Image 1 (cartoon, rainbow, N blue to C red):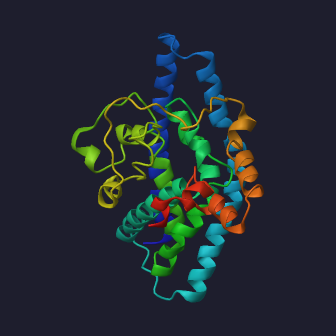
Image 2: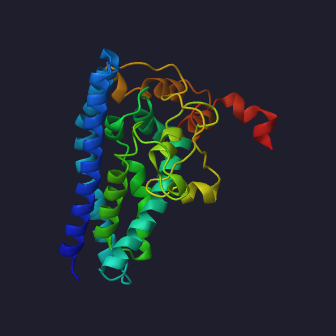
Image 3: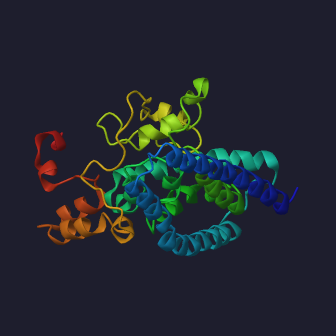
Length: 290
């Protein structure tokens, strides 16, 4: 067994997930066209989704190149107990990376600095496969932090990077309304139904179902919510723009205004590292002091 075999397996899985997503997107387009439900705004929203790949891909090339080089350097220099390169270890790495992704995703929702990037993914009022590639330019930064421990544990650095990519590739097909509930799989996998909940801005759906491939993490850590009524997609605040430039940087103007206008350094740090929507009044409230 060698890394080239693992790379071929990774490429086959990545291609398989991508082809499923592309096929679903084609069906979505045909359905929208023949049913006349694909309106001008929906089409422009798809264009905005695709446009986010312009800054995102450029950033991801640099980030993932740095991740790969950094992970390999650290492992070769400091970690002498790396697991062997085998098929079972590859799937074990994928399982561990999915666990790390759960925390990456949860942090991206609960730390405002990272939310400025991840909010781009959530700002669409639509739910279709094109939303799966709607990313903030620097969204991959938090992935560096949450997956780095896997390298220190001894998972091969190359497999960690491959697994990070596969967890994201898997999620292409779950951004759709074409597929209903999938029975017992709803309790195991991140399905379209489970992920529609995650994109809902209704109070009961906010900050739920963070899982990448598996939904079991949400069940273990208390963030699971099954789909009941159809979610209202998008951000909680009023955001309707389909202008690509506005979509790319939607959260940054208010973020910078809040940080710059903070009266104390504690407030500034609160605006940066506390959850979205936090204000200094929250810190002063009795509930926050307990």
